[in-house]
Length: 169
Image: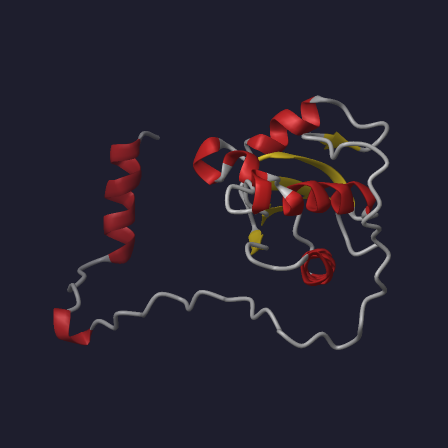
Protein backbone atom coordinates (compact mmCIF):
# COMPACT_ATOMS: atom_id res chain seq x y z
CA UNK A 1 0.00 0.00 0.00
CA UNK A 2 1.09 3.53 -0.60
CA UNK A 3 0.28 6.68 1.35
CA UNK A 4 -2.75 7.58 -0.78
CA UNK A 5 -4.33 4.15 -0.29
CA UNK A 6 -3.65 4.35 3.46
CA UNK A 7 -5.28 7.79 3.67
CA UNK A 8 -8.37 6.60 1.70
CA UNK A 9 -8.71 3.50 3.90
CA UNK A 10 -8.43 5.68 7.01
CA UNK A 11 -11.18 8.06 5.76
CA UNK A 12 -13.51 5.09 5.09
CA UNK A 13 -12.83 3.61 8.55
CA UNK A 14 -13.37 6.90 10.38
CA UNK A 15 -16.40 8.03 8.42
CA UNK A 16 -17.83 11.53 8.44
CA UNK A 17 -16.16 13.86 10.94
CA UNK A 18 -17.10 17.33 12.05
CA UNK A 19 -14.26 19.59 13.14
CA UNK A 20 -14.60 21.12 16.60
CA UNK A 21 -15.55 24.76 16.70
CA UNK A 22 -12.98 27.15 18.08
CA UNK A 23 -15.07 27.87 21.20
CA UNK A 24 -14.98 24.22 22.29
CA UNK A 25 -11.20 23.96 22.19
CA UNK A 26 -9.18 24.19 25.34
CA UNK A 27 -5.83 25.91 25.09
CA UNK A 28 -3.48 24.46 27.64
CA UNK A 29 -0.99 26.83 29.22
CA UNK A 30 2.66 25.92 28.78
CA UNK A 31 4.01 23.83 31.65
CA UNK A 32 5.61 25.96 34.35
CA UNK A 33 9.37 26.23 34.25
CA UNK A 34 10.81 24.41 37.21
CA UNK A 35 13.16 26.72 39.05
CA UNK A 36 15.75 25.75 41.57
CA UNK A 37 15.72 27.81 44.70
CA UNK A 38 19.17 28.39 46.09
CA UNK A 39 18.86 28.53 49.83
CA UNK A 40 20.86 31.26 51.50
CA UNK A 41 20.93 29.29 54.75
CA UNK A 42 22.94 26.12 54.70
CA UNK A 43 21.20 23.22 56.53
CA UNK A 44 24.56 22.24 57.93
CA UNK A 45 27.91 23.93 58.00
CA UNK A 46 30.39 22.59 55.48
CA UNK A 47 33.86 21.79 56.67
CA UNK A 48 36.33 24.39 55.45
CA UNK A 49 38.91 22.12 53.82
CA UNK A 50 40.37 24.52 51.26
CA UNK A 51 43.72 26.14 51.94
CA UNK A 52 44.77 29.67 50.99
CA UNK A 53 48.40 28.54 50.86
CA UNK A 54 49.79 28.81 47.35
CA UNK A 55 52.64 26.41 46.68
CA UNK A 56 52.82 27.67 43.10
CA UNK A 57 50.92 30.05 40.81
CA UNK A 58 47.28 29.19 40.30
CA UNK A 59 46.87 27.24 37.06
CA UNK A 60 44.96 28.79 34.15
CA UNK A 61 43.65 25.31 33.27
CA UNK A 62 43.34 22.31 35.55
CA UNK A 63 42.79 18.65 34.76
CA UNK A 64 42.72 15.78 37.25
CA UNK A 65 45.20 12.98 36.65
CA UNK A 66 43.96 10.45 34.13
CA UNK A 67 41.70 12.82 32.19
CA UNK A 68 42.33 13.65 28.54
CA UNK A 69 43.13 17.19 27.35
CA UNK A 70 40.07 16.70 25.14
CA UNK A 71 38.03 17.13 28.34
CA UNK A 72 39.04 20.81 28.48
CA UNK A 73 38.01 21.33 24.85
CA UNK A 74 34.60 19.79 25.57
CA UNK A 75 34.27 21.84 28.77
CA UNK A 76 34.76 25.07 26.81
CA UNK A 77 31.77 24.12 24.62
CA UNK A 78 29.52 22.93 27.45
CA UNK A 79 26.33 24.66 28.55
CA UNK A 80 26.71 26.40 31.91
CA UNK A 81 24.16 25.00 34.35
CA UNK A 82 24.71 27.46 37.22
CA UNK A 83 26.95 30.38 38.10
CA UNK A 84 28.44 32.06 41.17
CA UNK A 85 29.74 35.65 41.26
CA UNK A 86 32.46 36.29 43.86
CA UNK A 87 33.04 39.98 42.98
CA UNK A 88 33.53 42.18 46.02
CA UNK A 89 33.88 39.39 48.59
CA UNK A 90 36.82 38.97 50.92
CA UNK A 91 38.92 35.81 50.66
CA UNK A 92 37.29 34.06 53.63
CA UNK A 93 33.74 34.84 52.50
CA UNK A 94 34.55 33.91 48.89
CA UNK A 95 36.03 30.56 50.01
CA UNK A 96 32.90 29.72 52.04
CA UNK A 97 30.57 30.79 49.21
CA UNK A 98 32.55 28.69 46.74
CA UNK A 99 32.40 25.60 48.95
CA UNK A 100 28.64 25.99 49.46
CA UNK A 101 28.11 26.57 45.74
CA UNK A 102 30.08 23.46 44.74
CA UNK A 103 28.29 21.40 47.41
CA UNK A 104 24.87 22.53 46.11
CA UNK A 105 25.91 21.92 42.50
CA UNK A 106 27.00 18.38 43.39
CA UNK A 107 23.74 17.78 45.31
CA UNK A 108 21.78 18.92 42.23
CA UNK A 109 23.95 16.70 40.00
CA UNK A 110 25.20 19.61 37.90
CA UNK A 111 28.22 18.93 35.73
CA UNK A 112 29.25 22.31 34.26
CA UNK A 113 29.20 25.43 36.42
CA UNK A 114 30.86 28.83 36.24
CA UNK A 115 32.54 30.92 38.91
CA UNK A 116 33.10 34.60 38.20
CA UNK A 117 36.03 35.90 40.21
CA UNK A 118 36.94 39.01 38.25
CA UNK A 119 40.16 40.08 36.59
CA UNK A 120 41.49 42.14 39.49
CA UNK A 121 41.31 45.45 37.64
CA UNK A 122 39.87 47.23 40.70
CA UNK A 123 42.22 45.57 43.18
CA UNK A 124 45.06 47.50 44.75
CA UNK A 125 48.03 47.09 42.45
CA UNK A 126 45.82 45.42 39.83
CA UNK A 127 46.58 42.01 41.34
CA UNK A 128 43.83 39.41 40.73
CA UNK A 129 43.68 38.09 44.29
CA UNK A 130 40.31 36.31 43.98
CA UNK A 131 41.28 34.77 40.63
CA UNK A 132 44.41 33.26 42.16
CA UNK A 133 42.63 32.09 45.32
CA UNK A 134 39.57 30.71 43.51
CA UNK A 135 41.63 28.65 41.06
CA UNK A 136 43.81 27.39 43.89
CA UNK A 137 40.72 26.32 45.88
CA UNK A 138 39.16 24.66 42.82
CA UNK A 139 42.32 22.60 42.22
CA UNK A 140 42.02 21.32 45.83
CA UNK A 141 38.29 20.56 45.79
CA UNK A 142 37.47 16.84 45.48
CA UNK A 143 34.37 17.39 43.29
CA UNK A 144 36.30 19.36 40.65
CA UNK A 145 37.56 17.26 37.73
CA UNK A 146 38.70 20.12 35.51
CA UNK A 147 38.48 23.85 34.98
CA UNK A 148 39.46 26.39 32.35
CA UNK A 149 39.04 30.09 31.63
CA UNK A 150 35.64 31.03 30.24
CA UNK A 151 35.21 32.26 26.68
CA UNK A 152 35.73 36.01 26.18
CA UNK A 153 31.94 36.46 25.87
CA UNK A 154 31.39 34.68 29.23
CA UNK A 155 34.03 36.61 31.17
CA UNK A 156 37.36 35.41 29.77
CA UNK A 157 40.10 35.36 32.43
CA UNK A 158 37.64 36.84 34.93
CA UNK A 159 35.62 33.62 35.07
CA UNK A 160 36.29 29.92 35.14
CA UNK A 161 34.25 26.98 33.78
CA UNK A 162 34.25 23.96 36.07
CA UNK A 163 33.58 20.29 35.34
CA UNK A 164 32.24 18.48 38.40
CA UNK A 165 32.12 14.79 39.15
CA UNK A 166 28.86 13.08 38.26
CA UNK A 167 26.62 12.08 41.14
CA UNK A 168 26.89 13.28 44.71
CA UNK A 169 29.79 11.05 45.71
